[in-house]
Image 1 (cartoon, rainbow, N blue to C red):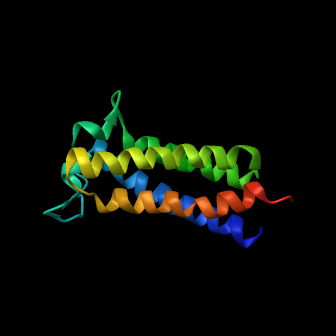
Image 2 (image 1 turned 30 degrees about the horizontal axis):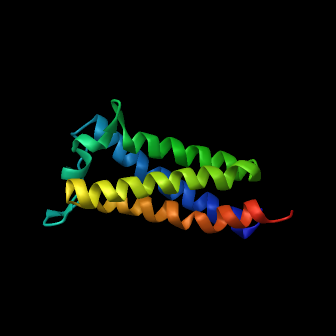
Length: 133
């Protein structure tokens, strides 16, 4: 397996781990949320806001499922779908960042870690999708 695929898989596992933690916490508030809640940085405010669910489904669960799909696409070398699917995730991240900054007025560091991971996945997604191999 080449380094680009390993990078994509590593980023996918990282994003899945953080998303799974946030998903678990959204279903069980006894799971501690280790995040500052001072000033603009306030994970609790973000993950308990009305924007943290879409039609009753936690956004974190949607993120976890997206990362599972990315891992499957990369592992099975489904190049024709990888870049469009990554683009869909990037657009959703744009919506989530807008929501955090302009509607909730707070930032979640775990959410930001997921957002950065999605953006970082763009490099291997593009490289794998656009390679002639």
